[in-house]
Length: 282
Image (tube, rainbow, N blue to C red):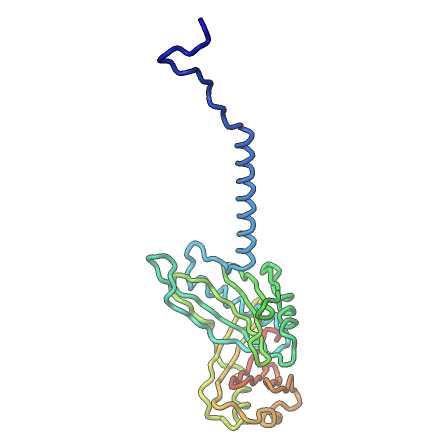
């Protein structure tokens, strides 16, 4: 039979050439490596920049003691510097899940250090914090920033606050409220008497009643306490007025503020904020 194609029959064709398995495996390997690299980069960015994430819907009531202890650790880390506790702030209205509203809790400590390098102050405090917090200070376009994880998804940050102050903040993410946050009891102590003496010296004995704030110190000590009042207007010549009360124990006298020690209490005036505080150092 001749090799010519017969009418009505298609010429015979062989099977399609399969895609080489080696080429497919190379593509799969490249895609896997690229995906692993992407995941690694995203994880590194998240660990560096993202705040702690709340898991298991831990409530604000459960997070409160962690925040309070973190504030005490910050006070202790500030050492002999003038510090003042800031009243807690609870912000309602965030969303934990589409069906559950929540709230965030924030507390803060202000370190008054006129003339000091904020980065040096933050670094000094960072070095004294618990190793488990993995605290560190980095320089950003907005200045030095302290960042640490106090555990239980509670974030600690620190930054310059102007007027010779450094602000250290502790905050939770959005949490179910639960039984709510209860601030540590803050009873009057020597700081209340020291604040009253400063108000008399400034000629404002009728100032509003002070706000009392407290936090537990590490190791069961303390608590650290602050009595604070806002003056309106700010005193014209605070250094001259407070010098007799300071009695030679001035910690700093600068444009940004004035502070002195009265026994275990540090009295500080920064702008319109007058505070009297006992720290965690005794």
